[in-house]
Image 1: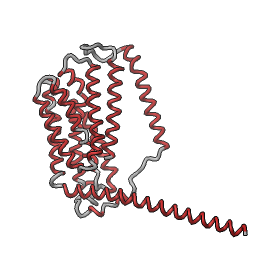
Image 2: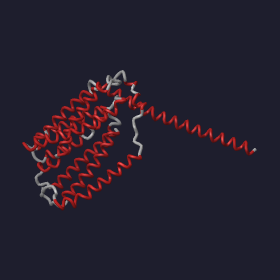
Image 3: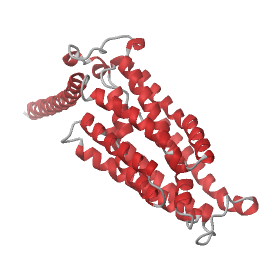
Image 4: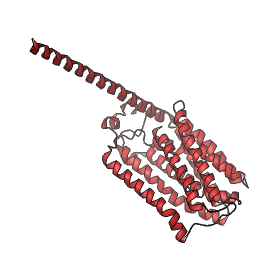
Amino acid sequence: MRITLTGGLYSVAHVTATVAAGYIFYGSQGPGKKGSALVGKEAIERTQWTYVGISCGLFALLVTYLFVPVPEMEDEQEKDVSTAENKVPWIGKPFRKQYFLFTAAATSYLWIGSAGSIAIFFMQYALEKEPCFSNRKAAQYKAIAGSFIAVARFASVLIMKKVKPRHLLLVSLILTVALLAAATGVRGPAGLYIIMAENFTKACISPIIDSLALRGLGKHTKKGASLLVICNSAMAVFAPIFGVIADKSSMRVATALPLTCAALTMGFAIVVNSVLASPIDALCNQSEGISSASKEEHDEKKSATVSDDSADTEQAASAAACETR
């Protein structure tokens, strides 16, 4: 849930940046004027302070990280996997034998590549489906689609309190594949609105895949997380392929690429909900047990501290009374 919540905050920032970019880069374009990227003196005047502000914000964030203690996974949490060891085949295995992690990482690579391709080319997709749109109008529609992702991720956090993540993953992928298939087959403006709806159904997929991949890794958790971060490079591979297909045919035909990747990702969700359902549930229950145990241990330590403080206070009062006498 924490990964999904963080993704929701990222989506809010993405929407804000898209709206700002629409005004900064395309503010002077009127309705029905597609135009092109700003060039020359106008481009410098419009963008220089934007990038200066971003650079200052990143520098301030860097300085903050130097002084704020970033929490690390505790050794107890890394090693406390004994309760699920009998049900989870990859617990305690060396990193090279973490086959579930590698499968999840490959799935994440496919999914990020497909989802990223749609996000990167969304404005071109909108301009193809709605020729009357200006670049600024297309950017506004992209911001609306991004807001769907933000809302869906926050909603997913609440849903996962009642529904198992693996179930939510499967349902989300079924809906996403259905919408992508519809967008591939539909001509005209309807395809744009189908793609916007697809942003709502796909919001929680990547966070759930990543969180499931890290379950039960123990001391390999940091390596596994690094591997999942590398998967973001998929956009650099799939986006050019998507663009070539769109140039050769159309955006509608190019949507077949993310549709194929989403279908393969759904295969992973089916395996997680069938063959690996028992290990995944054991790990999720074990994780909840760790959280509860940690909370109880914290409460016990707090109570012990309060008792010690009270005893020290009583001893000090007794000593003061003796000196007075």
